[in-house]
Length: 114
Length: 114
Image (cartoon, rainbow over all chains, first blue to last red; front, side):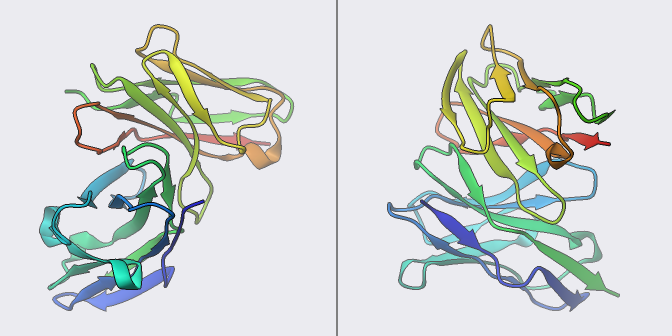
């Protein structure tokens, strides 16, 4: 079975500071990995995905993530936080490498201080 | 493309009652997914359909839960004899077979069982 661990259920940064949200996964097959963002009272929105192409993946809103097989990690970063980045972020792995049956981590709530 | 819609957005019911939720996927998306999200947790996969065929069911989906997608378009999720532990956000997502691997999520139905 696949699993995802997100270290830090809450992360607080100052506006303009680096954002780093950690994600580690376990998978018995080469993984497809995703980061989703959830704003209050809204559905999840895809930020970016890794599907066995380039290991450094760029997404929307200035976010990017790097797939590191040796570390089984897929950490999400953004060079400069904006107030509008405050939200819940979820890392997920696909169980069957076709985008089906996502297994999500517990989520990290990002808070951005002015 | 009007996005994934779910109805109702909120449902309060008494323990023991039956409830039914509806999901309308993005048109022409042939895959449809149901997830459950409890407070402070990431979504958990429940079941998914390819067209009208239900291909996978999680162990989380007890026999009180049933999902259908009779014509390969909208889907319904029914919970019989609701329990307080069923209180959660029920999320629906859809995906196209075109190889994007991106699940598009609806806003969810929040169920409260009193």
